[in-house]
Length: 402
Image (cartoon, rainbow, N blue to C red; front, side, top):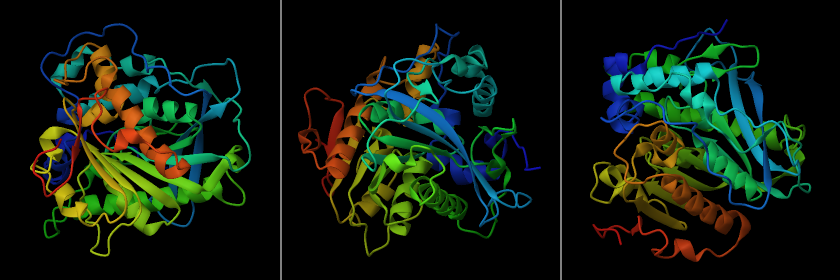
């Protein structure tokens, strides 16, 4: 039986020093004074594209390797959520998370401010995708975007973005990197927790080595998922609709940090996005020549911000590139969580109210993907827009963003 571990990461001081301070993890990012009782039913905004959206989950097993975090697990098991265009006109709306997943996520934050939010509150979130709807599209017509979430966060943390991309004609595959988050639910009812949170880093190792191991493991996970979705016998019934020549990756926090490593190891990934993730694993001097976009919050990710890895690796991005900073954003603003926790009555200190964080993320990610996977010009990515004054363009060595 695979290891089941739901002990909060923030009760492990060695890991806290290694990871939490560098990733701006959930313990601080999801909490701030002012949390209040739940305020109605949380919801994801309607997608903006012309297509209706279906969603389903896949349970995949990589028999070629052991799990990197639980040695007793002889294979690497992954859960993947897919969003895609559908012609279905109605059906059952897919759940956002299970009540147990909501409980473990909120409990894992381990902050008293969130105790005022009911443990299962996130499971009440209204989504827009029809569960297990029939995929629609022509053979090899749909670009694929693979998503990787932040450390300890669930694969559903970017559902609002995934639904929007699917409505625009993309297939989106978001991966639970098992034992790296607070809850992964398998079809047989097992719920695994964050075993990686329990591992004490070697005292003699470099402080970043533990996180670098996670990044390398995630790159392997993603390549395996691509094999399963685009190989000769796809594990998803809509696999034949995917265009294997048009694949991109978008990740948040640790998932964003894993994007360059994935692209360097797997040439199928043509373009990448890092949303607010520190580059623990440097881009090599040989460079990354494929398109890459950075999106971040201003405290850490301006050229003079606290995270110096973006400026370090910027010169090694030798293809098309953009560095965007979103004023008012927090670490979770590039996921659903900033918006949903506001809807549940908590004040995170975000300057992006209502659905604004979601609106911005959707717009700029879609523009990047449409440009590089569909070849459609995107003036939005050329200069600041009066419609999105929060978004500033950075270009080192200039210290300020315009």
